[in-house]
Image 1 (cartoon, one colour):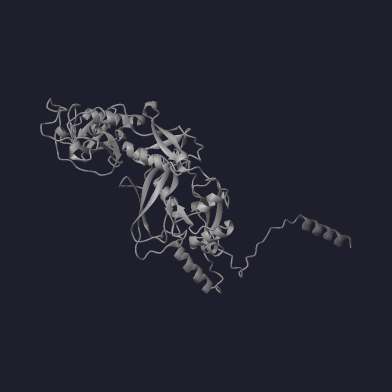
Image 2: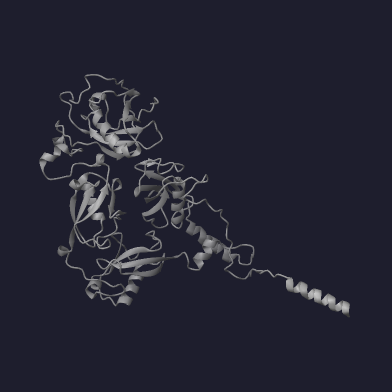
Length: 510
């Protein structure tokens, strides 16, 4: 009996020391069981595999251009982020992931920047890209291509028809779609010309028409207005359209056009009644490159988007929006924001950074300014008057034009004064920097009567921030030694290519 009691005590001790583990038994009858694929973790974006920095974060606007086939709905233009030293392939992967419901898996996609197709193994730095640049995504879709959404639908159907086969599981995307996690989108609404900070959120299925949102809005606000419409980025939406067709993602903002809401001063969102437009305009001063003498004044309403005066500035000064960087109080100014959102009261200064070589003389109605316009509109403005305000205008481009072979050497005949009878006309030339033939050429716009010295000055001013102190130009493998030689006298024509060799580097003949 004593022996049995000892064995019982030992058995109890062992039982008390046993550590249980949770055992999960999968229920084969549960439709929610799904097969989750494993994807390897990627390295942090801030460093590459060697641990070195990938540079500053850049914002890039991607615009979809379908040149063949059709999408399953629209893909909205939107902003993406990438580091300056990160390969463009990561940006492409992000683009395809974000737009996976509209973009077929087999679709061919390429980036195009200023007309040049980009190598995805290169970086934004390689192509001299800057923050807030605009890139096109060229999409080609074969007729037989199917979208991921269609594929998921077919997979879900196949899974339901083979429910007796316990080894097959629906995809995780199909499971999320059946449970309403993917086929819905959150829409943020605000009253047009009302308080931009007073918003309301709606959850709408991607395939539901916008009319459904308007109907709910009417019920919630008891709106008696017969005309209620929706606007998306300033464009009026068809109420029969859907978020899927418009390529919308979560937290897309729509403007509700409801005049009665402004009169009520209330509703779903708190709406403020604004003064009349004549009393609601303020003056915004734009200062170019920090120079107080370059300030230009523009008028706009408190609820208008800065896009309006940015476009006016670009048109007046002969530049494009991608050439400019607008800031207010040190922060980048977003084109879609309004003075009201930035708490502007009038006469504040907005700074714009733009390459001086890009700036044309501000357009006026006075005829006497036509001679200084770097791009004459007609032959009447193509005079032989030389002006110190004629600056070379730098433009990004990718065309590679071959010029006729010409042996150029220093000669007293190469002077700024063109031969009699040679008309003055604007031309564009390309420069390739330091023998980087794979890099994107830079275009400069000058007159054919301008000298190499003028091009040299404009080039150094443009690339000074990148370390350029001096530069020599080569044309058809010959060094151009005479700064007073004109482009016309050298045989440089429209889209001719010059090789720019900086800071005494060695030129490699092509």
